[in-house]
Length: 506
Image (cartoon, rainbow, N blue to C red):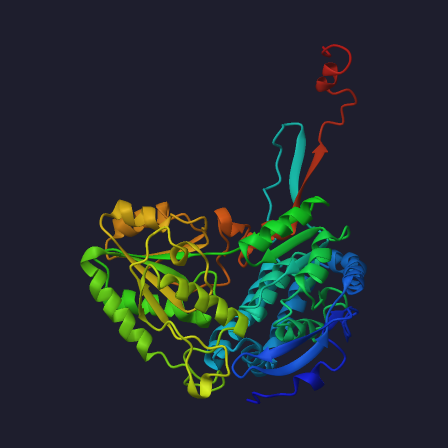
């Protein structure tokens, strides 16, 4: 596996992918992709400007009639070919993802890439399953049926934490339903989104069905959201930016799909398997260096297990191996950038004034000092209303708080603005059943935390947004429902006409 392929050579024609071709961005500004493990620049490119967004939207508009008019079977076949091309490119995709994000290669090869390929295969099948209500004579005199139709050009904005998977989550349901798309990845991490779009073309999808503009939010992103020819906006990112996206989208009455921030609670009842819960908390808190909107960030542990849980988690965190993302033994890579590392460190440093840092809480020295690394961090003693408990940190930080009765544990878990994911740990089916009902989140895991599957939806409630990625439910986001109604009577003058003119016919 060539971990250091020449990115500059591969994208010599530019970092914009429009109508099936790479091209240079039209902005006067450039951006550098930096390897966060070393701090070294690996690629420099010209950013997208408004004219690039216009060109991408025009390409998507031009491709829409043919793609929307394709049969579900034809779209399905194209997506099956797409999955095959991605499988052939799996090693390169994993290397590019680890290079631009700092992910451990075992995460890229065992999670990000196979998950994206599986999503592609799933939507290849789902493309044939655009279901609606059964046709029938609901009024007695008419036959009604439902059509699910594509919306048009989709303008999607994806984050930097899972660039390949987020590209897949945005692109696949949209195009499986017959839409065309313009995707704006985060300017920090455009490489695998571009490779994903190139694979679509190699698989035979028509030019313009999948387009990528690599630019900043204020320049490329805001114009994409505001563009009058874009029929729908799908955004994944912070709640603060999501509010801005919603404001812009309303100016042209677009459909909006928002997957926003999270602050997932991890509720451990006193009859839980302590060892399983401790392992689950460490894995759930540290995956992708904690840069995951569903990561376990707040562990609420019933008091009889609290001390033992803290000790077990501290021991496990101390065993986690930080290192070169391309070393197969590395458990934890750097954060995506030094700026993000410093942001996380700021949260922890401020928490020292009101809480205890049990382990971690600093950046490593030695060979890792040049990278954006931060040690796994465990915090106790933080008040429920403190910043470290209430705010999304997006780093390898877990706060642990005790609770007494079940009512209190669930109340604490629900006591943030967010509602993306949560988990509950207990051997008691009634306790877990109650938790699954009362935890306010789009996903509740029982005795586990983090796993996702293509067949099931992902999305939040409250400040975590609305709408679903993955699964057949995502077609509700990317299709519009049309009711078609046929008169069956051949009667010229209907009885209901008397409400407008005349009397009832006898």
